[in-house]
Image (cartoon, rainbow, N blue to C red; front, top):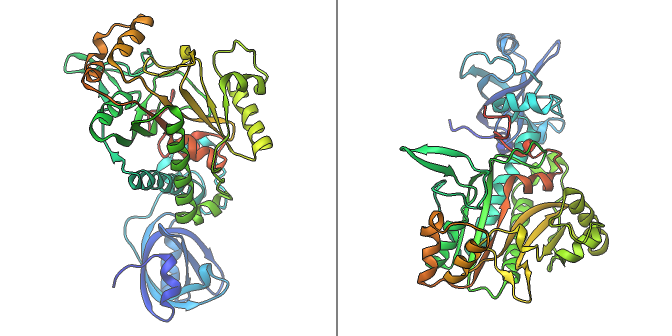
Length: 428
């Protein structure tokens, strides 16, 4: 008999079915016992009246994996309006050791460190698994939207010979006796692949050895990277980003409505045109000094409140960041060379995306590295490609975990990450 999932039970009223999953909860009443079975789709109620089977159910512990064979009957008070009666119950493994929190309760009350220490079981709780379902749907929407526009998915090395961002915050390792680093981003490689496919994207891990211990930073996170050629300037990149976000949000709404309902989340509307302000104006709106070189978290929050108040938008572009705060490969604004053709996208008052137009001429790369006192040699394989003809191009990167955290209203990005890696955590 083929196994079915709990959500399929309403289609099998009157039939004998086979379920399998985890013992979510047992309710032992005087005349009858209820076994609540949990599988990947949801919960099923199993009614136990036969004394021998009841005795067996009483001996089970929560989270024990079992198989149930029984008859489906209608019951409006049961989950999905059906339940399973006259069951046989067969354990598929030894009795489970109970985790240090109750998974059957509506809310997971354990502290976040406790949940992370026991992630393999904490993630079974609907509130935790729902966030991961949303994450999966967002990635699916990201890929589908870009595939429709002729982008090609690429896979680039995660071990590199030099720091991508010209910074010191990299994880160093020994590569057969030579120094190497975990990649901070696929930036160099996705630019080079524009010379092959014109439009590329990648979904993969990136590594930042920054000593941040905040609710919004991870040392390893999933980056959704995009790069496209033959752009006029950064505004073409912003238009692709807007469409990509709309596709991600639409896919989440379409595919994982149950997960959204579990978390009480309403997906935001992505405006047809996301409002944009120049960095210099953003400082004024946020009440920051005019010589501030970057936006602090408090400034981002103020800008998010302004965008919602003035434009009814959860999203806001901040363009024209100072060149001094952008990587060497960023294209300057031709009209204001001290500022860049780069941007950040704020989502509900938090930086979600960094992007912009890149340099595409070999001579400009040599000049940019020289201006920053950077030697060319560590970047030779990257810079040399621009001698062979590269179109004007640009791109962006979305932090997946931060996107899901802002979408769900999670207070800490670790709440929506299966197995976080940060300043203090390497396990589980």
